[in-house]
Image 1 (tube, rainbow, N blue to C red):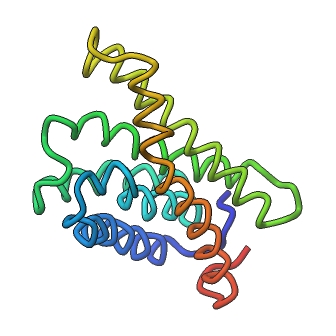
Image 2 (image 1 turned 30 degrees about the vertical axis):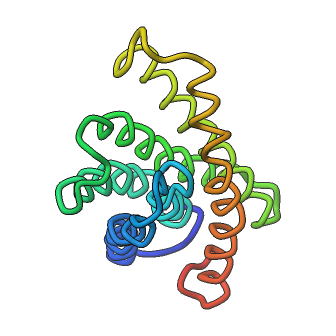
Length: 178
């Protein structure tokens, strides 16, 4: 069923580690103004969790991480928490689903296709929920494009560079196997 072979206990431990990283990693960027919107540090462990642990664990990581981070650190602020929680839940679930479904025969290609698909799905959900529910009437396509792609470009590039490298390093170290 899952792309990478691990028992449930190992998946739970890795999910817990990703949740912890999702809480601690943004703190490293706290001293930079708007660093969360620019570098997207909470996204990295959630996407990673979905890719290596599968969609149920990625989904759980995407829901629990922003909740606990908001509770313990105040980031994200409560006003933005519902939209970010939904976005991260989609990242975790879709990255796991795509990693399970895409089989090109090349792990790196599968990783990039799954990662990019999840990144696009999460941003679409974030934009749609803001436009229809969370900021209805005050949200536009230009606001969404700016927030999701222009401001976030450094974070997108970091995700594309780091996440596949981390998955391949874990695979090489035999911490995960196909």
